[in-house]
Image 1 (cartoon, each protein chain N blue to C red):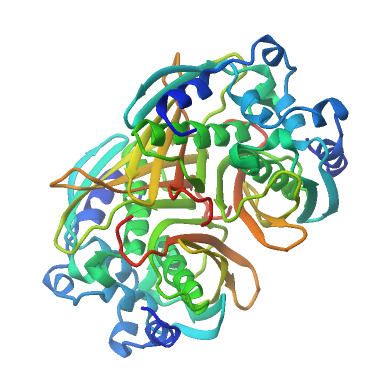
Image 2: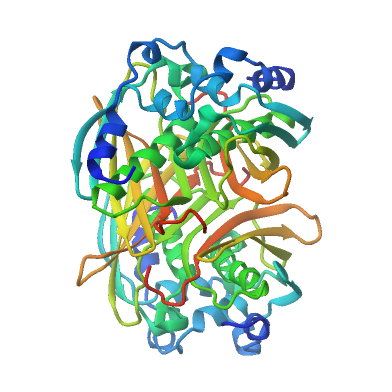
Length: 151
Length: 151
Length: 151
Length: 151
């Protein structure tokens, strides 16, 4: 991914009709398939899996976009785990990437509810290498909880 | 996605072997297939597509994880567009979600290089509804540019 | 600020009663004194000043905390400029630091309203060196607009 | 701080020469005066104080800019506490505001080193109400560690 021509090709190379025809919400299936839910208690959720090849980026490293997606989804799970009546819409998501997760490595995600108010809830998500315990990434997810999706 | 039991099922419902067998780096293919590269000049990149059903979340809205992934990928493209010799590794990604993008709507992404130093580069990415011009999301991507992936 | 003993001293060295006796809300006065309001139109605010010595950090560089404070205050001004009835409470603030601003240099802040909904408003703030036009920092401020401060 | 005219006045009302004449780096003195350093061990720092009136914003609430400044300064302290030879320059700072801290309330800041590499270090900072234990804010600080301030 090093020169502009390669990047242009990378961004626009179509995989054709097979991908275009995938069903609604396939994105979640692609990211979550194989995930284990190790703990689900009010305000705290633990998940894990071995980094699947399909979610790698260059260098056999878990794609940064997958990490951000898991901050979204697993963070939302921690908000729901507390019994809030609805999960709302995302306002802000941020991630700091600390160390790469390589294909095949077991990683663990821990999400904690930081705040649950009437209108806004916030959860943190930490990613660790399960064998070494090393922190790989930390993110935060702020959601607006009103029933309507209208901010 | 409203009660804890539904969430547990959602997080762990396996789509089985077909998904597990998808090839390395399929994640990028799923997100980028169909994307048009409308402009690619030093420090500025424009892309667009109609939100594909496969990338939707509940409510037929573009998944927040896809938006974050595009901040990663299109932001990296703006960094490469400036002729920097390597694209480095992600340090931080953030996104503010302003308005939903519904399935089928044409959206445009504009990425600008904000800073290109010896060690660090930063790009912003804005998402707009192409018909109305309404801003849908704004994100930022900070990368470390050293050749090695070792921070 | 290089060894642990120096840091301990730095964090706890008291300037004594004179500082402790400063009046309520002096923090805003310290940051804003001397600021010029160059433009104030609906959804867009421009401010400028020469970086005052009192707001420097080590190396005669504008303190990162001041930049974040201006993302807060000038971002709020852009929200108010649009005629919203109240300014709400902060949910999220983020800043990417791109280049240092040295004491005495003229800097310009441009804040734009990115979104104004019923419950949430978002503004961006960009800092530039006024002479060179170089971008020094970019930040974002998300506020919850309900009348009460209870999230 | 509710109508545009009031905001214009607020942003530009000069406190005059007394403030302009304050010495270099007074900003840190204003924020840190009275802070107690309760723990300083490798990778972890605890500080506390009663929210001083001078650092309040409207509503007798600790100013969001002060919270961001403490994420900067106390996060840097956690990086230095690990024995890294220099503290570097800030790349990114973010804060999520969860609950207000009122003037006079005892608050505690806990900073943890999340990552210390050759070029980049990251620390988190959590703010709690000391009496109730309630989480008030969570932030993160990413620094570039090279000796020179040139990114």
